[in-house]
Image 1 (tube, rainbow over the protein chains, first blue to last red):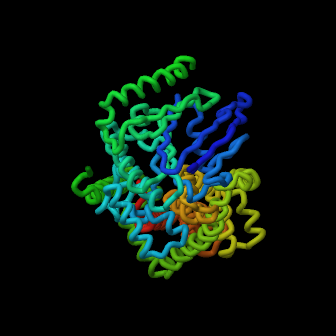
Image 2 (image 1 turned 180 degrees about the horizontal axis):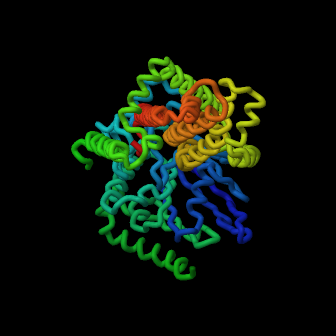
Image 3 (image 1 turned 135 degrees about the vertical axis):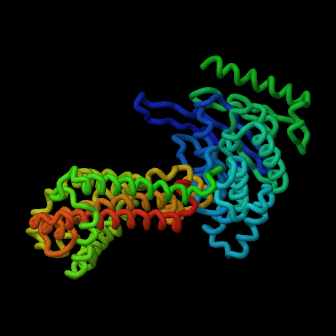
Length: 255
Length: 256
């Protein structure tokens, strides 16, 4: 069943160097429960694509639709995790995770309970009353994930959420995300430039071309689940990786 | 991460630098290196506090000045903060209002003193007006800047959690800008003191600036120094109060 469908989507910017085509003729469907990952060279417009799905930017042509209804603006049904740390610094971990529920008017006791459940799920029990400035980068992103999940979105959008973390922390959070995705049976559209990350997480990896960004190929990843970091040692991983490398290299070299 | 007791170390250093200034003053005055006409010896300044107390003007003049600063500056603060929030978040409002503010803030307030005297006379209203004119325009632009420097990703994150425009204002932009706004308020209240003293020097019949001006006419240099010390101490106190307030209101800020 289709969760997200993007049809003939394009995006042009007016810049002082003239009109720049950021995205061209994007067609993509993400099924319910799918973990789709988009990789592409930097500046290819992958973040723009995600922002359009989030409703933070508007498409110039074509359409993005969630469960059949066109996306016109941001909404709680598409929760986003950003690469930058976006916890509200004046709220505790608990209050940050409750934020979306508070907007919806969920009663205090219920939202406290929901928040605690997701804080536990991301492994931060005991930090409910900490302020963001007291947390490490990895912990902040765990809270950001919990905050989005507590809001029960139809879909999770992740814009290089682990891009600013060190390699070990990134591995831990990738496994955490896989775990959470399985427990919550979420639908995720994930953006990264890290090929290993893409393969470890994805059902399908979509390769984007350099600007103007187009979806150039879809590479299914058939590594059995549940996966953990050891998946990167399997022959299937190497096979997929060399395939993706080849496709991406054409883009990087041509740039 | 920090020293054992940074607060105490800080207090010692502050006390050391203040006593150094005092020692230099005392040294210059008591050795006669500078004539008492220009630099009064410390004990005469302390005695002048007593004289002013006996005359009943020490507290009443100080209070008059404090009252004028508080009213004039509060008027500016309560009007400038909302306007600054508005300009800082709306491009249209910024295009419309910011140029007026930019123009107005380059008018030296001192140059407006004659005009305010004409409009409001020499009473408290004129002091309020001078302080308001001196701080309002700057404060609007400073607050707008503080709001604009709240990371855009915080508002974007709030939007994807379901926040509408008003909720984003109330729950993200305002709290996010609060540490900056507290700083803006602390800085402008300092300016308010400057403008008040200027206004009192030109025309007034009470207040610390008026007292200093009268002391100059009578060559009572000890009183001039006493007045300056009061203004300085009040400034230090206000600054300290605002920092304390900042720690209470925004304990989460990195600035603390």
